[in-house]
Length: 295
Image 1 (spheres, one colour):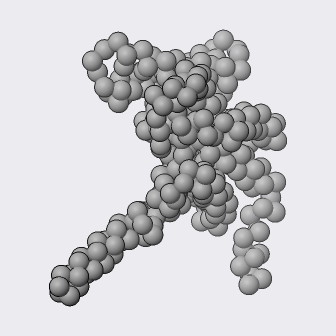
Image 2: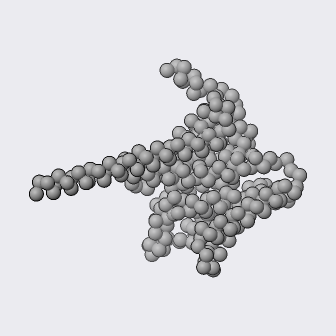
């Protein structure tokens, strides 16, 4: 037991591993809370679109010598607003518009990045550099993810109703426009905060997988929300620890663990899992057969 305890604690004897764990937890907890709403709202592709679309904003912010958060946030919101406008004013479906908008913005970002000389590393932007963060980066991330997490928790009932039934939310007096753009703003903030930890490519897994897993496990939104956060914490801690012992990159390791948990939930979730549903059907057929036989 002591050997296993030492195996777990060994990575966190180093300052850079402690910093990696803290920033990954900050991102994971806030992303886990938002993940449930994205899954219920059907905004998984929206998260993917916004995460890719922040790249040109980062490059332009660097060229203008302004904070990257401003460029990334503006670029992400531009993607979301453009998608909404084109969906409302064309006959194209939303997923088609998202694909065109985010791929175009992402390609623009790559093109700009290759044409300028910068201290930024494209790999760090795309896949994160969690082992290279400083305490100032952690404070910056906390300033973004903290308010986003608090808003999601405090307004979770309104956001849940908006995600399930926007028309009913409007009837009961909720400002659906404010909820819509507020949710987009929170999504953009968390994506911007995630750049150092997991990068703009892998953040989509952290935003979607926890909600998809907890959806398999829970019936009520309240339970789903806290399960999603707990799953993120487990994946984060285990991913950081395993990455040290396996000499692998932390962010992809966290995403791989989330993917494995999703596969397990897909197969073994008590009622919604594949095997659980199969057992329920078998039991129902057996009960029907026994009832028919008794008659």
